[in-house]
Image (cartoon, rainbow, N blue to C red; front, side):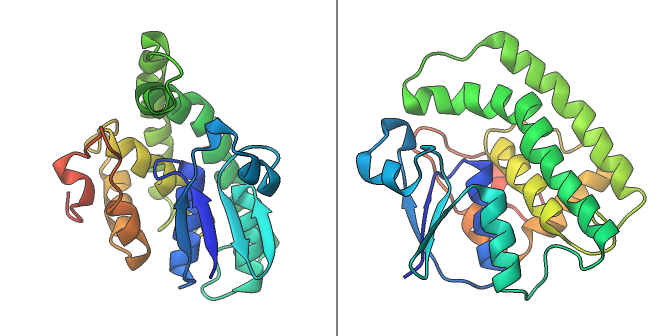
Length: 221
């Protein structure tokens, strides 16, 4: 049985889960308290991070490496475009969300509000929360600008870039930190992507002590 070591509110784990579900690959989800640095888990990934995927006798780490492996080995549906220009743009936007958005928004909001409590590593820093709340406005505006020109974030077809963005935004939506009224195009895009069957398990996530808002699992908001 394929096994994914993950945390429910990790955007990197959610990105891998979305790819697995979109490609209809069955996987057992195992929640991993990675901050406890369990010896068995550290042997699976010495970096001490999730996600880690155990598949066909292989152990793989790092979300982008896992996603690209899956897209090559299980090419239907294809999530990285065939053309070099289109593939470059999809990868650029994956990096945008997993690097820039993560640093400026996810780490400032989700990690301060939730991860510090879960890992018992301190209290939220109000300066970081304020910075994240300001930064997300820029990112939503940028997404809206992209979607004014394209059907999906990286072009006319859905790609891994959409899953990367949706993974981060879904985590933030779980804690009511996304203003969906800021941009209609972004709201429509998210409604479209979270209506996909691949999103069902994501919307069913429950984190003890952090109940999601009513609209979280509502496909029509």
